[in-house]
Amino acid sequence: MAEMTKEEYKEFLLEGTKTAKLATVREDGRPHVVPIWFVLDGDNLLFTTSEPSVKAKNMKRDPRVSLSVDDQTPPYSFVTIEGTVSFSKDPEELLYWATRIGGRYMGEDKAEAFGERNASEEEILVRITPTKVIAHKNVTAW
Amino acid sequence: MAEMTKEEYKEFLLEGTKTAKLATVREDGRPHVVPIWFVLDGDNLLFTTSEPSVKAKNMKRDPRVSLSVDDQTPPYSFVTIEGTVSFSKDPEELLYWATRIGGRYMGEDKAEAFGERNASEEEILVRITPTKVIAHKNVTAW
Image 1 (tube, one colour):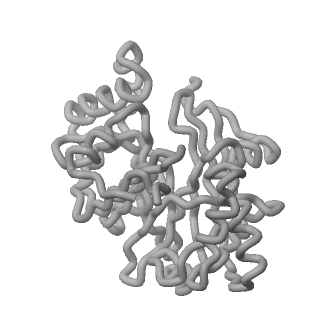
Image 2 (cartoon, rainbow over the protein chains, first blue to last red):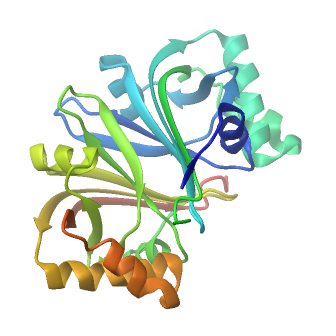
């Protein structure tokens, strides 16, 4: 196992269509985790979600989140990010990032369609500011 | 998007070397999420972890967990499992499951080596009993 440099883990996060698994905490204290599509803006992670979703409600109650992004094939690598979130409902900003995210995960030819779909009125843009990053590559090389 | 049947999601969970992202809650209320290797025993998920790990401490404080297993390529599919955990330190049981898990993720030729590594004295076997399963396939087919 070896640590990734900052350059390496940013490349790892952006490579292909890796999803992040976003963990939040429910009102009754139970953990909640779901896959999300994201892109980077500098060091921040950006994603969209619908405002009535469980994860959005959880993040509004407590902005502290944890994310896991991994390569689930040997020799296995993973990045764990802890951070705090802030929200935006600005329609232009939301459409801009939703379109970039759609392009990453569905291809440039479908970016606009997915961008519009994920920038609808009930959607919000979530920005994660990392407070701690753990990034390991070749976990099973020992 | 379509729901998976129970047969489908069990096959999905066991296919290839998909990891589960296990979410737990820290003492200060922050979420924690990390990839784990697992196998199924009937409906239960089994994995090993070291007793001093953050996730083990979190689960001993609160046995309620959430897991996400996903195919991170189009058209995207995911299974979310909520459940509660119980622990075993029985050396035979631990070695048996650690070896099966090693075989799944590293190949049968390395199963024994990884089994022994993950059944050492500070390791514990964790059994997750699901209380709720959400399983969706072809998320982007709309």
